[in-house]
Length: 223
Image 1: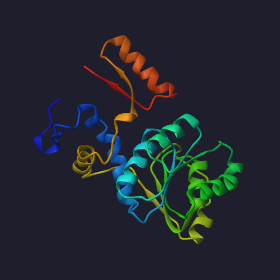
Image 2 (image 1 turned 60 degrees about the vertical axis):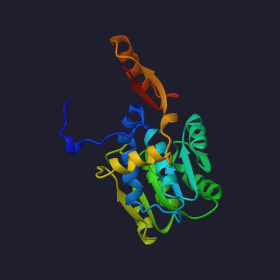
Image 3 (image 1 turned 135 degrees about the vertical axis):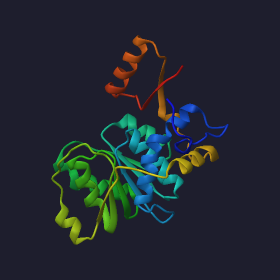
């Protein structure tokens, strides 16, 4: 594939092509952290421990967030989040009726007010939880787009002046992403869980592995 030079960014010698490929999902997280104004004074909640949730965790830490709690349905993914540096994890259900109890648990695990929540799933339940747990005057960044329509407690969030911020496109992120990888402030290598070649059989197996979820986070093709 041929690209104009001004659209390309050279990888430093200590950044592999695999790491370079992960600049794309990392860019989503970097853009989200910029939108959320993450700083060393910002306690962060990440809803979802899939690939985007995990890179958001890594980016929030690189932006200086002092405390990060990750929430997910899957205990295995929460274990990965813990290994990547989450200060606390909370396993939740799919039941909307569990939200009040789970909000209380999240607050206890955080041990402080939640300043910014990143909903990396984009479901009615995750968004409702994020809106409920975020402090008055805080921010909820909608990163995941799981549902086109949601039923969420906007009125109660509005009375507490919680800002809802959309995250979709990103720009001017590649230089920072590359620098974060070059400097070692972010290590994306643990996210690569599977590698496949380019034979027809391996390509089909790779897509099946990715679609199956399980312990797959990022699946790579290698020449």
